[in-house]
Length: 537
Image (cartoon, rainbow, N blue to C red; front, top):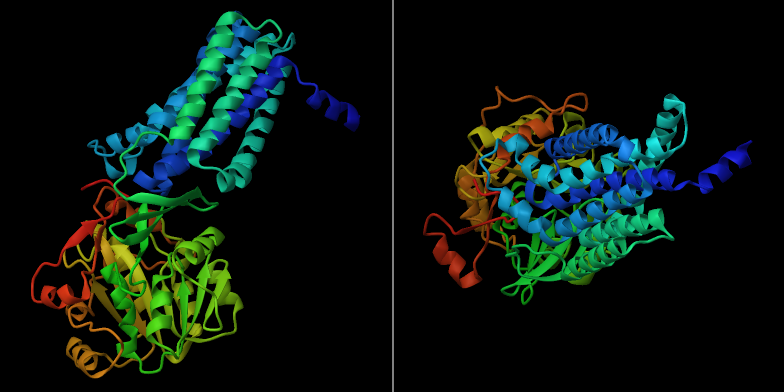
């Protein structure tokens, strides 16, 4: 019986083939949608909720309309649906980026910012694919309605399962977004031809060849879009995010899901390009015994690279979840493992839970503006970091939020959570205004309060390889946290806390050349550049 069932699956009828491919394509497009919109709108729960809702609504409408027209079903009609789907996919490949960028400025509430783009880009092809199942049920030849519909749903669901796994585990790690779109477009064209063979009419042949050519052309050009990030050196889709390395003005920048994450001066690799990385040295003013450092989050390895250069006695461990990020750091950001630099490719919390090592400094650099791993934000995690620090150890967290106002909820919540574990917590906003920016939160196990004046005195008297006089002026030690929750493993509403930041400009301070920085410290405000990953406020 088992071999008979297997054989029947391998000998699919043409309607069954159509249903199977529609399941593969619809699920593949759904996952692809998340990758396409993430660089502009992020990948929060609201973005994914919008994607799932749009796809379900479009399929439902297609099922309904296809059921009303089922008496018109034929293999040719199925083929035309796939040709129309392929044509729309070609448009998505060619104009998708431009369309996403143009809809980003629409006056839509932040939680629904991605909805117009998702609806107009992926609603129509998914709607077309919804016609396939009722057409296939009509063509199945089964007189039992229940048996026909059940069989169609089973075949379509199997296709969806294969589409989900194939896109997630094979296509995204191997191909770019445009090439993944090309795959689904060509699959639709080939399916259309298979449905009408051998009697392929002139019209079907012309449309199939023409759309296939447009798909290839769109994929080859990479689509039309506005990109101010410079000349792309490397671009890929990893299992976790979109990754791009771009050069502009002598600076190489790593973008993760469209957001600037790390930067390197090509002529002076240890110079701090983004000003917030200068604050990585603040812990050396709070402790005089830092020899072993752990970075949770690697990126372009800016912090580890500078620490190794400036502090010969320091050994650095880096935990990075995405192996592609590690490879890129080695190839494009001059990172080399050595006895003083050890890289571990795994989840940061898992590493801290499993290691028996203790550190003098732990740096949390795994947060992004709209994608924060909640397991690295909770009270339990902060307690784990404390357990892995020496008695005089320091925790440093690079938090992206606003220092005050509605967009400060995540920062103040994280401040409160860290404060529940560490006796002293300090923070240093890096942009000096009520905008979304990098806020450096530093916590110590030492109960003694270090004042702003004492930090400035230590900055003058200690040789830590960098002058932090300007950076220390943003010192804060007492934040209002009564109106924000304490994050725990049981309740960590990170997406809700990040929501007020959607649509806000992410401001990244850039340092100037060494000669100019001294003069800039006497001028306010310092220059800022806005990150390209999010909509303008």
